[in-house]
Length: 148
Image (cartoon, rainbow, N blue to C red; front, side, top):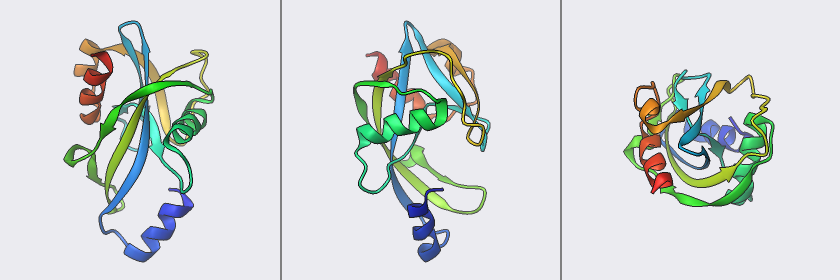
């Protein structure tokens, strides 16, 4: 949790908090890079929160560096997403919703140094393989938009 979100939580407790975020889509041919998250053990895309004063483009580059240890080339915007599919209650009782700007990105290498606190593993998957994964369902819409 960022210091900014922590300071908000000190004031509002577990009440609903809408958070701006960014997400990276990495595509290699017909495969997409997914990361399995440590907190939920579910598969998702790489991303995170936008810090105060930070642009979304800078935020996605920072999040990828923090989580994968590499600096991506940000090549465009896939779309913006939010709503019920990005709402959850965390194990500690915090209620959150997200609005995320999704960027198409390229990686300089497949040699990652995973952020052990956040990610368990990364792998490349086709869309057909992703359907069978325990994943955050909101990524399905994002990946459909990234393809077409």
